[in-house]
Length: 393
Image 1 (tube, rainbow, N blue to C red):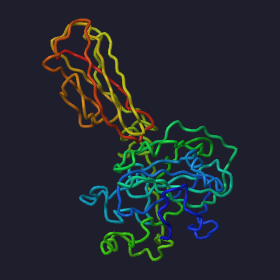
Image 2 (image 1 turned 180 degrees about the vertical axis):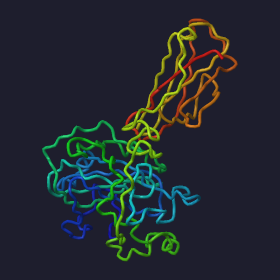
Image 3 (image 1 turned 90 degrees about the vertical axis):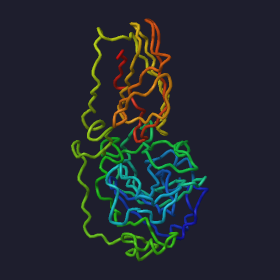
Image 4 (image 1 turned 30 degrees about the vertical axis):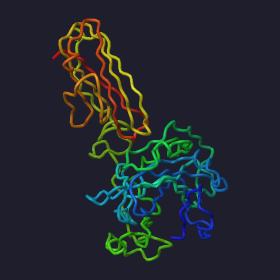
């Protein structure tokens, strides 16, 4: 309460920080819970950035020091999110609970790691978001005191900001979140760059924080009060829960059955062994084509891919099938130059066949199949064609 919606940014006026000198004190390497109230809305993203105090009146200071972009959140329970709205608290996470896995990103909070290469001093954490159908960004900030860092430690800037797939807002596109946003040169390991969420399973220092704040903002006040632990928030100005011991989630492994720690698929890729490729090879003696080209235009931040596969036929065929095997899930929505014969349950292997008019291809001829599709935005790159085949069935 007491924080008017700020659509100018980069922060509200400092008087809303209530004159507390150090409301948040952390050591380098601590994890911090960061949350926001749903305000009865769902969908969109939140950008989190950290800038030195004194530079916090500049948008550029935050644009140049982005920590992460995550989901704004939505009520995932059946029938509870409709047309971009839900009833606060919208199944948001309570105090004494925290996001322990990257995929659990729809509950109006996240955690961040305090970088190891910050000089001792004051910083300002900013969240920037445009939820649901709101056509402009809202800004909110908090002052943080950091100690124990090693400012002589240098870490190169990542090329891209990892963005998860989220329920989209209906007004502000993802590209407006990433526009002008640059990954900060922060070190998330004591001796190097690291990854901000590699140890997300650890309990954040402020785990008692309850970002749901109050039922006063809910369109269903009575229903809000019946939600998990909402009645236990006794001070809207300091919304928190009494926790007792909060045990950390199990550390992620490569055999826990959960897609976490930057894995490409469950328990493979990233820090785990490479994901298996099971595409059966085609021997040169059997191969009816001399060259297989694959061209694509892709935007990882938006999860969009436009692909075109071109096959140079070596031996004349009367009918054909083309197989494309991607390294991750690709949801192809439109295609041309062929018909869809099959797709596997993981949407990684697509088989296309000829139409009635383009089955016969002479030696030296070409076959072209194009498509448009979507892929998850949690990776820093676009889908890779791991395997391909072209045969006469």
